[in-house]
Image (tube, rainbow, N blue to C red):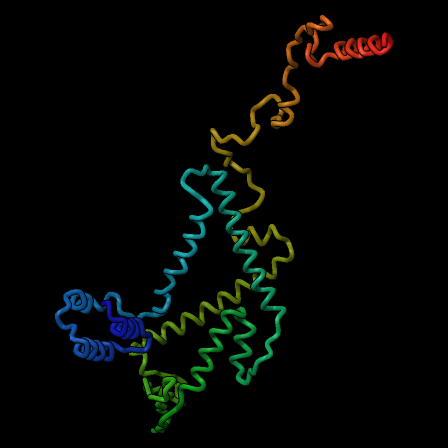
Length: 320
């Protein structure tokens, strides 16, 4: 797998979200034959278990795109591992955990402020663009706008067929080189107001998923309106969120053996500077010149010695 061309084409084929199972098998066979990889045991083994890991085989599973959110969970785990270790006590772990959560909340508030305070100066001709700008943050809106533009400029209706109340539309997708990559068929029944797409084989499952999403949306809207009726009391909002009253005796105490700095001492902790000033004084020593027990001088720098020397100099100068 040292060939970069083989690796790039293999990744593009495996991780594509648009391939069907038949399309994947056909392109896989062509890729193996083109590069002469028929004798590779590892590729043969991975192809044998293709139903377990190729995204094309998970297309009929509702919300199968969420399989890629493992990276998001791993990034969260790494963020918490950096701020805490196994040597931390319960109190230290809770402090680190709350610090990390506060950092995430701050980033979320900053993103919300940036989204609400910045105006979009681009061209929003479609209503879906204005709706996406009101819902998503600036970063996510850039990605959504890119997908909208790709669907707008690279997808087109190549054929239309009307048979009674059923309308069949052929939607083609082009690449950047204007080559047709995929073609889907969308069927719309004007009487039943139902839509079916060839890119999803399980129509019954998609209908059930759509109905569940509608019910979930109603529940979310109902919960949101219920929270607004609680008033401005923060305690009521917290009680509704955690399902527990705030006026409850706390039965959890600090673990035994946890000691904070200075805890349990009868006196306060002194610094190194204060310790140096509080040292006991030096033992007094006798000066051989003045014969006194002192701590600030000795016989070499005694003041009496200097005074006696000055008197001798005065006597010598008077005799001259």
